[in-house]
Length: 94
Image (tube, rainbow, N blue to C red):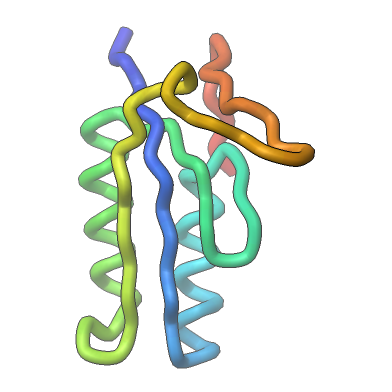
């Protein structure tokens, strides 16, 4: 079984058409998120596929996308109603 890594993906896209396309791409890989920031548990192959798909959507001159590797739930500090991310025994894409 391939181990998944927790990432935080975020974007700032200026064109509404590209914004909708990027949202569609990210939702396919995300386990949670809000507006333009998403938590993603990714295998190395899924990470490459996500980056390739996003690269095909954004305009590198006008838009911004970042994918941050997070160390793990023990190093994440949450405040308010936040819940620590959990890597369950399954992963749902869709």
